[in-house]
Image (cartoon, rainbow, N blue to C red; front, side, top):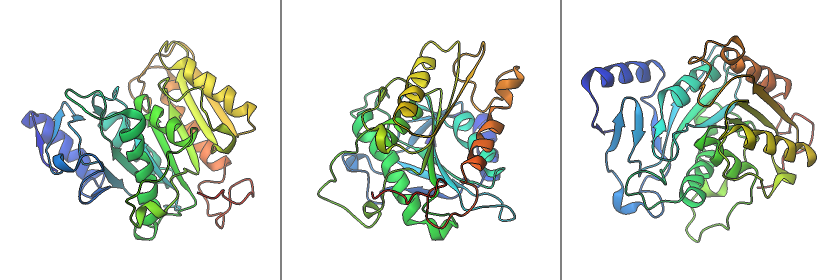
Length: 298
C-alpha cells in the first residue's frame, strides 16, 4: 500500500503495530478495480494520524488468530469515521487483535467513503457493496485462511455499524450483470456486531431473516444510542436473537474500551466474547446455525 500526507514518526508507529498484527496480508476485493471506481484503481490512500481516507480500492487486511487457539470463526470489521475517513487503528486493528484473543480471525475492511472530500460514492450503494463483497470474499477464501464459511460475522463501529445494518438487516440489491466466482458466495453474515451504530439503516426493512445480533452503545450518545435501542427492539420483535448493552454515562467512540476510565466500558469486549461463545460461534457446528436451524439460502 502507498500512503501520503503522514508524518514520519506516526508512520513508524503505525507500520510497527500493523506488522505485529499481520497487516502485510492485504488483499484487494476487486483485483481490477471496484465497480464504478476503475479509473481510480491504484490511487494512493491518505493517512493522517492513523486515519485513512481517499480509498478507491476496497481491501481486506487479514489478522489471523494464533494457530494454537484459532477456532475457525471469522469477522469482517468495518471501522467508523463518519464516512469521511476510517479510524483504522482504534476501530480496526485493535478490534482485530481483541477478536484474535477469542480465537477469531479478523478481516479489517477499507471501504469507499461517501463523505470524503470530492467523493462520488454513496453509502447505500458503494460502501455497503464493499462490505457485501468482503463477506463473499472471506467465504470464497475460507480454506486459504482456515476459517469456516458458515461462521463469518460482521462488526461495525459507528459509520461502519450503519454498513452492518444495511447488509445484515436490510434487503440486498439485485445482482449485477457482471459477476465472478466471489459473487457466487452469499453476502449474508452469520452474525452481526454493531458498536454505537449510526442511524442509517434503522429501522431496518428485512429483519425477519436477520442474523443474531450483539449491539453496544453509550447511554449518553445522542447520535447513536437511539438507533442501537431501536434496532434491538425491532430485531427482538421479529424473533431474532439479539443482545444489547447500553453503558451508563458513556458517550460516542469508546472504541474497544481503551479510551475510557469506566470499568464497564473497558470490559465490554469481554461481553462480546461471552456472546460469541454462548451463540456457538467459537466452535464448529457442521454448517448449521447455533440454534440447530440450517443456514438460510443466499
